[in-house]
Length: 72
Image (tube, rainbow, N blue to C red; front, side, top):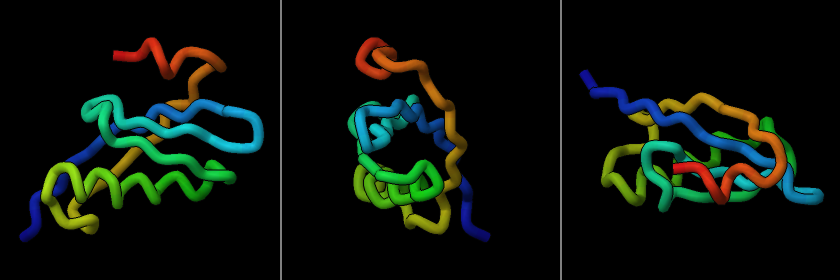
């Protein structure tokens, strides 16, 4: 059985794009045009943690503009 790791993804609108950052792992960042595509950040999470993508789950937290840079 594969152990599952969950991450909360902060999403902030930036013009035509969404900026994504993992709350638990701030080095995991990505951008998407459509918020429905936010699961692509799992690739960055897998790379940084060494875990397989299929063992990673994510949930989205939509932020007001300007908050992602101040998140810790």
